[in-house]
Image (tube, rainbow, N blue to C red):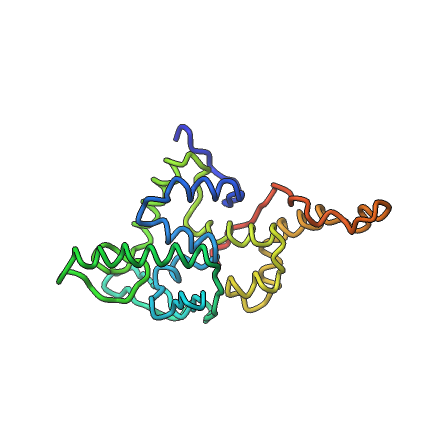
Length: 232
């Protein structure tokens, strides 16, 4: 499609993330995108997230379930996270504020729906309170990407984008693995080797020893952030 580039590795750079979030700021999906891009949660985990698992006072998101879709929609259900990756993610004040505003907006939708609202306690739902399907989210996401004129990636690639940007910004590998729900940091290491190689290049030891510096740890990491999308 004219004006829309296809990303080879399916991840966005930090400046592209900022562009996307600015373009979608006034959409009902904005908070959902912010959670995906900040936490690296899987799409099903975000679409299955309940308010009872979110503590905005403490800034905690507990990943306790995911929304599971099957070949027959009648069999769709909520189940444990993939590979039983239950975990608690600590979120910052900016994301807390975004979620507070989203909750207010959702309450207005609930008031409008009245008796048609289906109470699943979902943080992210349709305007009637029901779970958001992966296909509907993908359709809306694609439209927003086109409006933002960014490389076209999948919703799942937002997970890879979040992980890549966390690593590229210096977040330690074990913590990134914990946030993503990887039981073993070696899984994260294998998946995001390209990002870590960029860090190593930007943080060569011995730089600045004659000028009294300790290296260029504050130098911006390589822009060549890449990751393979393996559907984890």
